[in-house]
Length: 204
Image (cartoon, rainbow, N blue to C red; front, side, top):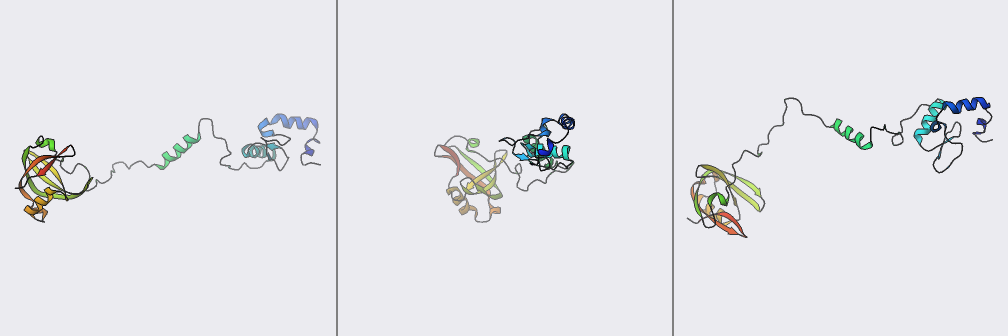
């Protein structure tokens, strides 16, 4: 006798009542096939997913329905992508009211604008920059630079000088190694290298 043979011994009326009271999804199949490959240990019916099997056992045999991630069907209005986005949104904490992060010491906006060749003129133009004694080291795109504060006309700028450039050697010979002493008027001229104009310190 098979384990589901006792289902055929039920009174015809009782079995019909049982069939009518349950949907086909919860009733299952009597025979195993490629789609229905999971059987109920109580009655031997076959089901395609753990979700349907669990709901069948809860409805027919009074077994509690387990949480089966990956087999439980999501509501129609909630896709897996939407569920992930919702979970991520919950993890993101809104900033506390009235609390903002402390600005960085070297944040943008604290320095002057860099003086450019076109602020002075075209190729060959000459000008005088007044060094104020304020400077800082910076890592530029072409190596380490000394950025000096200079005055030109009524404006205050930052002037970037590569440590490997002739301009730096000329200024070092004149002012020395103490950057605070880099004060005074310096003549500059506009030169060109690889089709790009730049500001070069002229020999005094």
